[in-house]
Each structure stands twice: as structure tokens, then as C-alpha cells.
Image 1 (cartoon, rainbow over the protein chains, first blue to last red):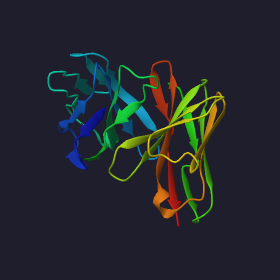
Image 2: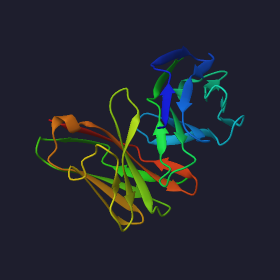
Image 3: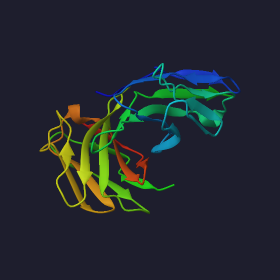
Length: 114
Length: 113
């Protein structure tokens, strides 16, 4: 079945530091890949996505590249801000199946210190 | 983007009582909604797929008589945890899809004492 393995947290960085949160997946076919962010007290929000190999998703300074050869979709940001403190979830959606629901990683808590 | 509202955000209940959690799509219609459960430091696990006007589809291992799902309209799905026990304490999140994107509620922290 499908699965997502995500870097365990919590991750604590200073403002303007470089961020990488690793994510690898197992899936049949050609899944779509997503990063979601959950700010305190709020629901999950789509941060970025990629639907095919070598696609790069980007949003708010965050980037992730769909690497089929390494089955990875690592999240990166060159310079984090305090406002980036949140929980980040990597997820995939299978290309087959009737419900096509999302499969999530365990989430990574990021805290950015001023 | 579209908004999914989940209520309540936190609830504490006594063992043996039932708790209802609501999930509403505020500005779009959702024929399908999803209910997830998250244990501490673990993934969101899909519990069931809620279908408007028909029975929900439960994932393997999820007790349908324990977790009652009603999707009576295109904008509302409810999850009722019946005869709650401390092991039901968890974080529950709903999701609704508009077009190709999934939108999530803010989640409900359930504590059973």
C-alpha cells in the first residue's frame, strides 16, 4: 500500500536559517505529492504540490521537487521566518482508486526562534 | 481558497457519553468528505469516507457502530463518537474536496475522562 515517511521533529531553527524537511514515499503508479502546513489552532492548508516527476512545487519561499528516482519530495526554504512556525505534513494521493484519498506522513513540528 | 469549518475545536466528555463533531463546507458543496484521526506524533489516519445521501465507507479496523457518520447535506457531515472511552481520545480532522484540491477543518481535540 501507499505510505509516506517524514522526518521526525521537532525542528528548531533560528530566523533566516535554511530549512529541509525530508519526505520519502512508497506508492504504486504515479502519485501526486503534497506539502500541507498547519498553523496553531487552524486546519491544514495546502502549501505546495507536484503532480508528476521532476515537477517543482513552490509557494511562500518553500520549494519541493518530485524525485521519482529517489521517491522523495523534500521541503526546503532558504531563509525561515518566525511566522513559519507550524506543523508540516507531507502527503500523497494515489493515481488510482475510487476514493483517491490522501496518505499523510506523521508531521514535523517546526519552531523558528527570533 | 475554499473553507471547511469544523466544530467544536476542543471537547472533553465523560466515559460512556457520545460526542458529535460537525464538518461544514462553507462556500462550496462537497458530495464527499473524509474523516481522519491523528494520534500523537503519528500520521493522520483515514477513518472513513462520507458520501452525501448514502452510507459512509469505513476503513478496515474502524468500527462503524462506534463512529457514526452522517452526511445529510452537501455542506455538512457529522461524526458521532458513541459511548466514548479514554482510548478514543485523539485529534479528529475532516476534509472536503473541491475540484482537485482538499480543504481541511481545523480539527477537534477530543479528551475522554
